[in-house]
Length: 240
Ligand code: UDP
View 1 (cartoon, helix red, strand yellow):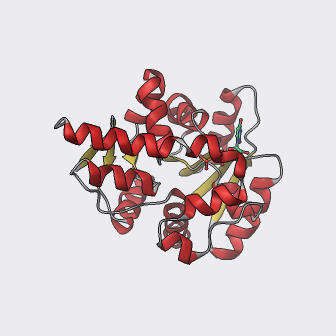
View 2 (cartoon, helix red, strand yellow):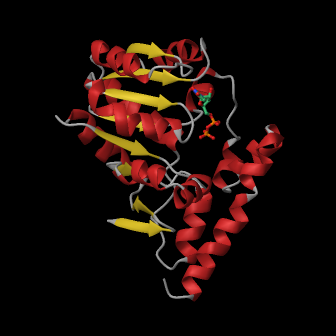
């Protein structure tokens, strides 16, 4: 089931259900991509129809941020729970290692994906990482070709928004992969260059605050959250 949160249709799934869907797509014959929009990206889609189209074309739309969960509650149609992209990716890699599905890492600054690959191979024994490319390229076409040549079933696309969603919508089908997932700064986390909030903060839904304290330059981006929640409350009052 899909739940509309201020213009973006989210899949109403628990983490287990999301991983099962992701795996089914990865094993399938076609191509689909997954997006993990937070409030900032939902608001970007409201202003940019092109970007909204890239989000709408996703086969799987996961509620990454606690802000989306609060907004869904305010709208009177709560989602089952948060499915942070980085955790979803972790669970998927566990299953991929078991099933022999291969992975391509795309994105981040040169050298980061290599370090991430080293850590991920150690963490998920048996995981096949069959290709790597940094995220600072001019021409997207050869990158899709590199994924195709690698034979990867799954590609993590970590280019930040809106670049990653646009790449997946436009070049994903040519990559030969079955599933592409837009995962923002996840390669930095897997490489260990960016630390995630301690578990206690994550459980309290305060990962955003931890990130803000570590990277104060994000304050402008995060200041949109109260506005987002007001939009949800207002939509509820107007009965939308
Ligand atoms: N990035 C990239 N190519 C670009 C711009 C950004 O590969 O042209 C990478 C950047 O190095 C970082 C990620 O995309 O690893 C975006 O991280 P950010 O924390 O902004 O994304 P978020 O997780 O907030 O969506």
